Amino acid sequence: MHAASLPFAPAPHAAVIGSGFGGLAAAVRLLARGYRVTVYERLDAPGGRAYVHRQDGFTFDGGPTVITAPFLFEELWTLAGRRLDEDVDLRPVDPFYRIRFHDGAVFDYRGDSAAMRDEVAKFEPGDVEGYERFVAMSREIFGVGFERLAHVPFGRFTDMARIVPAMVRLKSYRSVYGLVSSFVRDERLRQILSFHPLLVGGNPFDTTSIYTLIAFLERKWGVHYPIGGTGALVDGLVRLIRGMGGEVRCNAGVRRIRVEGRRATGLVLEDGEQVDADVVVSNADSATTYRRLIAPEARRRWTDERIEKSRYSMSLFVWYFGTDRRYEDVAHHTILLGPRYKGLLDDIFRHKVLADDHSLYLHRPTATDPNMAPPGCDAFYVLSPVPHMESGVDWRAGAEPYRAAIARTLSRTVLPDLERHVATSRLLTPVDFEQRLSSFRGAAFGMEPVLTQSAWFRPHNASEDVERLYLVGAGTHPGAGVPGVLSSARVLDAVVPDPEALR
Image: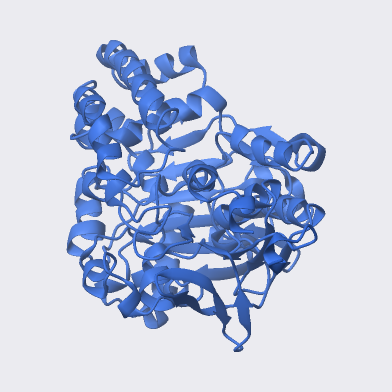
């Protein structure tokens, strides 16, 4: 009798590369289906882009800070036989965002319909009716783009062809900004209703309008914050994995994916250790997965040339800082729009130059959870979209001047006298995305979400080049953002074979 057919033969082994939300979610789902699962993480702690930094008594979430669609987390806890609220305290955030324009005008972006109508009327009464029609359109796009397609694999071109009529009807060929502009006339409202693609690495002037579904997704489930920070969700998922019998190994970087014939058979770790696996799931950046971890001769679709010709998202400059005082009038999420909108986005995405002006996202978790900082203090991170590494910017020389410019903007607007009150500070630049987080060209969100790099055109969840290799995370379908990344792990339920088929 063959060993694999013996009743005591071990369950097939799934090796997961990377412990971002996509990798952790994939591990939970594969464990629930009966696989043995090991997660291999290059850094010294789990989380990937959601890594947590702690210094001088302050706690800083490294990456994602906007939690929407909490049911996607609840689903993972249910698969593990637990309830999310047993382990994580999710709090609704209101307003979702406070948007501040260069001239000081403020828009509180909320989930409440009446409050939003009032905010719109404050800027342009004549756009209220158009805003309502935009919300209705967002709801319709959400019904197709998220509810019907986000968890469905696009393994064949016919899968794409089937949705073309719906995409045409929903005007997916238009950009987010273009679709928004067909509903409202006020330029400030156009910016307010079109900024969401920046949360997933896209330029509102190029990103397919299917991403306007984010507006309704937020309205449907709200914007949330986990007490203890996003890291509380990472820690909770790691506990689920270990409780289900899985393993999460840190300081275990992957040198390459072993391929025999056309099939993934395991990993070679950076220290030379050989790992056998029946399936491999990569939560690493998709371009990095193919470019660095798989030999060129094993790739027919995702060749070096194709990877290099693809379009990539912007990068990010992030300044994490704590203050020795509190700024009580600053919201949990603040967006500070600079003097230019399209011009700045053109500089970032098209020209790939570092502009003198900037727009910023300011995160103040201590507005909801004071324990993220010592008593009487505030924790912040401020994020500025910047071009990826093709810009040629020397960030080693340019990081501090850029940080100082951001500090001046914050002092002038929402954090008066900031520089005198900074108690701790650390920076994240495109160099960190490229080298520490292994993102191709330092792009913070993988491939740019334009129509020709979406759905079937994106790297598939089931690799087109290597059998039993699967991709999750921002660089595959459906795309970046926490809901997208968690949905990519849902796709595995449809494409990864049942473990019994591999025994």
